[in-house]
Length: 200
Image (cartoon, rainbow, N blue to C red; front, side, top):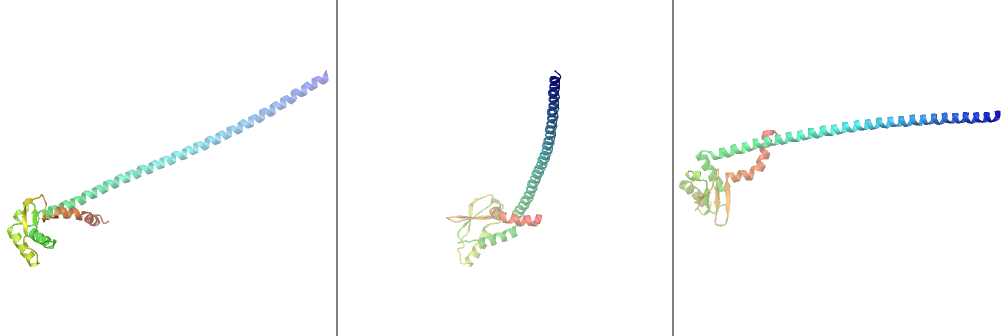
C-alpha cells in the first residue's frame, strides 16, 4: 500500500508541476498578448495623431489657398474697376472735346479712311452743330485734291454715339465711332494700362 501511495503522490506532484508550467506559460502568453495589444494600441494612437495632424495641415492649406484665391479675385475685380474707370474717363474726354479739336480729329479720321468720296456720314444727333455744311465742304474739297469724289453727305439717320462717325455706302458700313474704336482697341489698351497703373 505504501508503494501505491507513493505512486499517487508522485502523480499528484507531477500534475501540480504540470499545472504550474501550464499556468506559467499561459501567464507569459497572456503578458505577451497584452504587451502586443499595448504596442498595437500605441501604434494606432500614433497613426491616428499623425493622420489628424495631416488632415489638419491639409485643411489649413486648403483654407489658406481659398483665402488667397478669394483675395486674388477681389484684387483682380478692383483692378478691373480701375481700368473701367480709365476707359470711362477717356470716353468722357472724347465726348467733351473742344469743337475745333474735335473737328480736326474727325477730319484726320475721315481723310485716313478708305473713302470713295460719295459715302454718307451717320453721326450722333449732338454732333450736327459740329459736322455741318462748312465742315463737309472742307472735307469734300480735300477729297477732290486726293483724286476722289468730293460728295460726302450727312445721313438723315442718327445713332447714339459718344463721337466719331459711321461711314455708309450702298454696300457696307464702316464704324469709326469712338465707341467702336475703343471697344476694338480695349484688349491691347487694357494690357498697356495695367502695366502703367500696376507696374506689371
